Image (tube, rainbow, N blue to C red; front, side, top):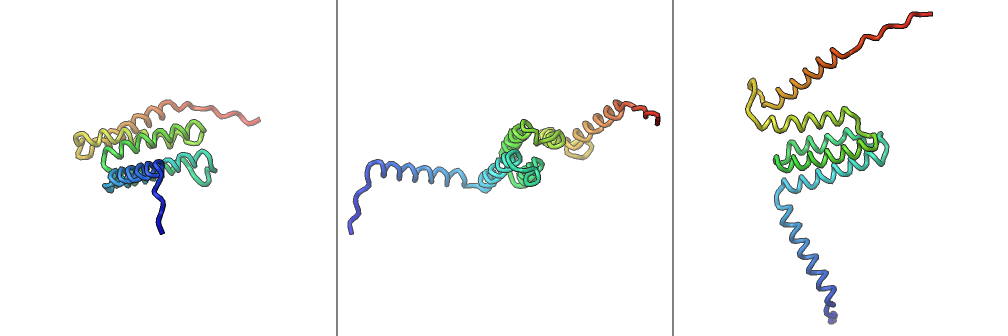
Length: 156
């Protein structure tokens, strides 16, 4: 049986498909890139599902899972890109009143921790831990001092 030759548009479509497949194969050559792609998809899925599905199914707090996995498995540059994507998804969740201040504060602390950990050690610990703990102490003291005493109402 003789097959008909492909038309010009079919040959063009096949060559484009082969070129795209080769590009994808070259891009995902390292484990770091494959893991970054998987974590990016997970972050997007959790961020979108947290807004459009019930909070019982997907809490915005689940966004911490790709960041934790990325912290263990990704190189620093890819991890910072993942931080940026998580920040964008948290802003998206915040616009729909799904992500609270506590969830956003966890990621703000992580973003504060990252550059300080790359610096010199303070008191024998990576610098970020000392800085984040100091910021916590300052906020705790300010919060403790700003609590107003509320008088109790007399029983009638």
